Image 1: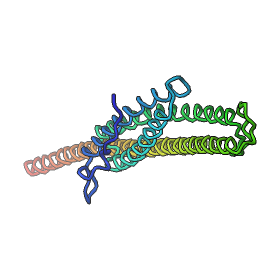
Image 2: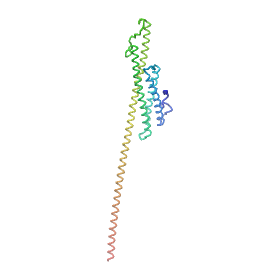
Image 3: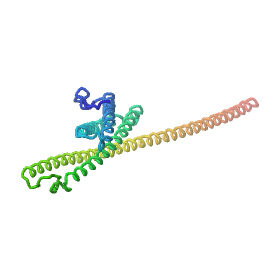
Image 4: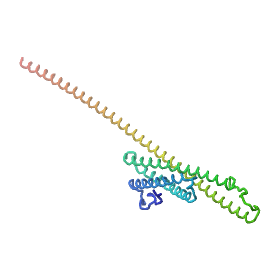
Length: 270
């Protein structure tokens, strides 16, 4: 599969405007970038495995450096997209949160592969530079020893001295370019580490927010349960008061009836 060098979804003007992009468009942009990163990492792994073999050449290394640099740019954009995407949802939006979690997991997986390829490329580039230094008679720190190529002519001949100097300059320049590429790789590895840390922080903060909401829900549930209990007790109390009132009314009615009966009897006896 060919490497992807097109525009990322987030960088495409058609995918954003003056306002914050909506969840659907932004999540699609992240998914598109993840596919591009995966495609590039697949090719990077093949190129890295060719370093130090018979297939190794300057064209392969240039291709690897170009691919790695572009992929690193897309990872930075995707990282920012995920942060923006995460800010658009609340923990109560379960479907959207699950989608963001899935994208973060996919991003983390491909970042692990990218970093592994970067580390292996750095290791093999350093080994190659070391071999080049040894073969060219160059000391560490770009020091230059006197080259001693085999020749039947005297090394003091002006032509030979000029040729040796030119070859040494070419070797030195090539080694400098490779060491500059190694420094870029090491810098990109640091960038990926920073993204890993930020993703972990983002997931942790989201988890704390969910825990807080769940605690509030549990607290609210307890309050509702307490209120229901109190309401039930109040109803029971009202029922008891009503029963007592009815009893008192019944007693009062009996007393009134007895008094009335006594009065009636008394009147008749007179």
